[in-house]
Picture 1 (tube, rainbow, N blue to C red):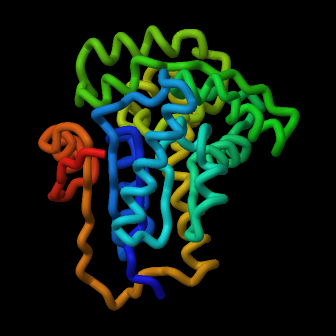
Picture 2: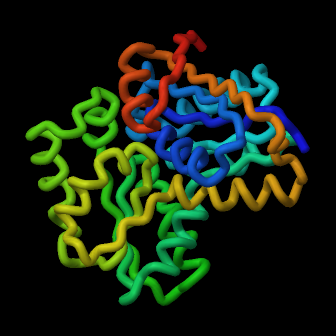
Length: 264
């Protein structure tokens, strides 16, 4: 048993979609979360800058004595997951491989769409992972640079958001049977995305799929939190406005959270 918390990092609030799934599947585990909303979105930034920012978030989590780190950001996973995993002596998970695997299992016609930030799409990592696992798959990728700013500003139901989502996803409409939400911010827009793509298109939440891998690694390394430890002290940190972060977090997680502003 290991009663230390699991650390989550993201460019902003998107990783909360992974945390919500963790709280559903593994409610006895404790969370420390850092969201770099002051510098979001990461997607349009150069790879070296994303690498530097991600390491700052990793080092922050290490000061909280976490037993595992989840890079709950597709862009950071694409750029630096392999490097972080190789350098740390605790398990480090990314969100891309679980999402790729789930898409292959889900598709009925072998036509998979991937939406993500410009950097994630530019890296081509989803197509590479999907085709490495299942070469016969046909993968179409689409960058959605406007989605993250809309989520970070908590504009989840506005008419502007609906217009942006519909216009952005139009090139994929009717062309795929499965769509990977290749950014952990995107599940917050899920109802609008589903409505645009149609009810027959299966949406894959890469972050939620990642939680299954978290569970496997907790068991493999025997570092589950003791079930006898009932008091959980979830901690949330943001580099931007703590009040706005708390509003999104409380709405999404359906619990009262304490959010602290930090400067990295």
